[in-house]
Image 1 (cartoon, rainbow, N blue to C red):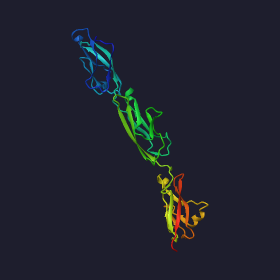
Image 2: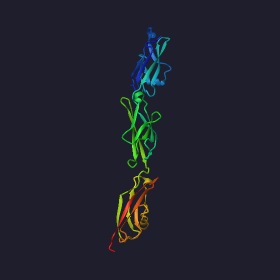
Image 3: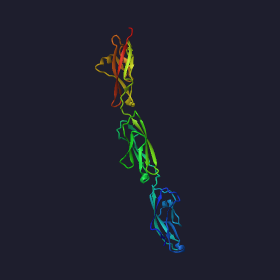
Image 4: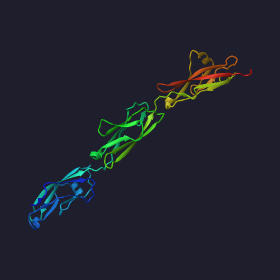
Length: 323
């Protein structure tokens, strides 16, 4: 009978080895002479078609040769049954298992998938608030599959490991301010430790929603107006204006007069204010000889919940006419 020279046959083959690469050579001898001692090799009957698509066997030399694309991530080892037969009239056959282990190379970049994303984030979110869940995997093994991930550029967000394997959370790391920046385009970087390393990136966009964190601001710290006496009753006396850095209802401003014990009389008798635009109308005709100056305060209140307000002092001086 043919006898294999080695008791065991095993080899290590790098994945993606070029077609035509010799993996290993088996060798059997036969003590007979002539055709009785002439040995040829073939795959065993149990060898699957998939293996035959990846490897060929030289029947004369016993060389196992790469025939197709070998992928470690698909299968990391092959146990192949090899048959050595002589060419006698009644041929003898001997079997031997050949083990081929596939070595991983760094041929897969990390894969980044967005598992969950809050596209709108409130600007009053506390540091540590999760805004997205990211899955990062690498099909390679060992150091080739070890991944380092982070968010590119300086932003108020960071990437932290989650409880689940290969899952990461995008969380706020500092206080947000929509008025400073209302949209963040984050670039998530994942890089493996292979040589050379492979890198992937994924971009996500986060929109900050407004919270009522800004009070209305008047354009001037104090308003001073000069009005000629004998003005018509109901005429426009002056106008104040405030702005609010928030948006929507949080920035919708209404104006009112601040009524205190000291100015109650002047408020009722002298002026009224348009709550929408801040126009202040005179409720009487002023007389320089009777009243030379007065002052009051205007309150600007936004429509947020809860609302915020600010006030400003308005000083009015009556100018003398030759009456």
